[in-house]
Image 1 (cartoon, rainbow, N blue to C red):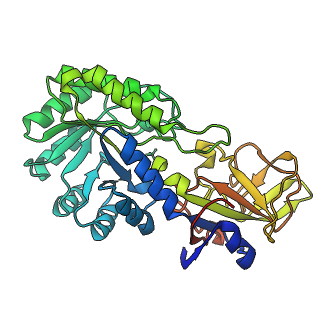
Image 2 (cartoon, helix red, strand yellow; image 1 turned 90 degrees about the vertical axis):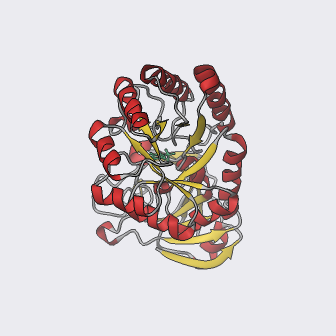
Image 3 (cartoon, rainbow, N blue to C red; image 1 turned 90 degrees about the horizontal axis):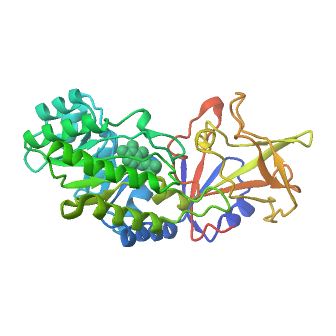
Length: 381
Ligand SMILES: *Cc1c(COP(=O)(O)O)cnc(C)c1O
């Protein structure tokens, strides 16, 4: 991935003057900082950033500049990267399964907050991590849906096991806390309602007062044209339900959005390579590149088309099958995408809200995937 140092006014300015043939990602620091301030102002607790959603150093630096002080990290490489950019940032190592050498690496890096969802991994932490001033958050799961895909399929203890683990954490002298993740792109706020109430139940079963409750990531981004997520309504629900469920024992709240913080700050311009016999649209990026998660999470329908001269296409929408550039038949966007009827070969298809799980998961499969990242003042075409 190449980084261009020029700062453009808007994506169309670069597209017109350079006519890039490779996928062109655009980053607007102002949008990222505005989103960070929205979380900092609205969320009733500590806001941390889930680094995996977009570990670009410009992202970390702009989040720090906006006032984000904590990071959810999942690996020694993420720990070292954040430590280098922010030596005093709080690191929450919330990947609940780690090798012994990974645990030791994190102890040396000064990690003071860990998550856990099993007896075996808790025993490992108790053995390797000094308890003094150190938090262990028990990660629990519920059979609730509302998200684009279910994170509980991999991580999280049942309510009963979580209560047992929370009691063990407290007995071992660690700061006892709870954590959950409702699933990414969670558009049903009632998922947080169920999870927070279950957290209070776990504390009752364990006879332990949780010091903090981390309500996860999962905050939705704006992917579909007419469905604009209402973050403030989710924040208000979390605040109200935490008080209702825990009363006087309400723990301090933490959140760790990835997508909700970073998605809106990036726009991806792909180029139409061909419209095969006037039907299928082939673009220069696909599911092995910046569009990896579309088959799992669904299409981003905030798509605009412009010609290489910067002329906006505005023909009546036509549903199109869109294929990526590789020779693999899974390299296609799900279903069909409504695109202006007057698009032509050489035009740019511009996807908004592309900051999460796009650059981080881009591959060079089949020789494609060379992506540039440019800074813009605004992301409006
Ligand atoms: C991936 C992840 C997140 C971020 O999830 P989003 O849906 O992108 O907000 C937060 N916490 C943990 C533990 C994660 O694994």
